Length: 316
Image (cartoon, rainbow, N blue to C red; front, side, top):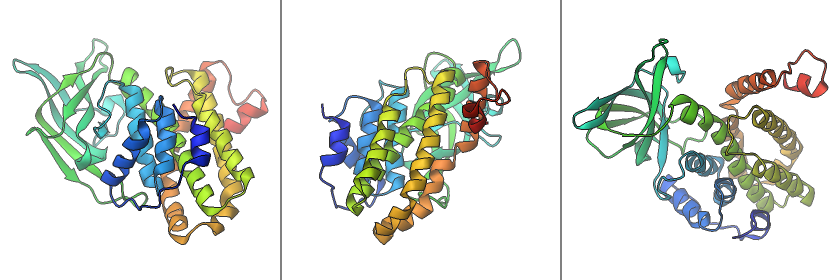
């Protein structure tokens, strides 16, 4: 097994442009065989990408494999949770029903990343109301190719347009029910796991850009220090308050590194620089939710932003 640090600094830069998701996924699968953890694979996959959108693909897919270790290494998988009312547990109206022919799913998900390209969907569905009135959620895997699944592509978003999104309608679709609670065991931890793996892939990609652009050694050292940070996070405990606080610190450090790197983009080829200017908003899409998790994490360990601790005040 290779050292991911050595890999980032010595691996040859493949100059072949990646034209499609299929191209990016083929390259990702080739490097995935060289590493043993989902975070390291995300880092190496990001390094192999020629743009941030394809680095995101590596991070997103490895996050799913961290959450669901038994899914096929070859299949593109997508989380399908968001509905017209959002992705809060109370907003989930897609229904899971136990029929004589097995479990079936009915409902519409309004924004599913990868959409038409996904071979399987991780669907969050309601199994009815609990005794206390709360929505009982379950997670199920649904094969995309069956007749009960209808995918409608959405227009490209302004950033990372290479990554498609879609509305997915399930009409009596055959479902494999996963054990545990759909929210606390799947959707909630996935948000944290995705943050870490996408950051890992982004850092791998930035090292590639830095090497291709002749950035100074000090810049590469800072990026590898950030890589070391994400590798140290406990992805087997994604709901840990301390873990969320560490992730908050990691993102703060990452923003500092990006600020330091800003003048160096003038050395980068125009196409890569223009894509970065367009796509970097991708990294902020979950920022509000991440900030809410960070605040809740501090409170859960008995510390709030009003106690005068400079480190806490910086996060508040």
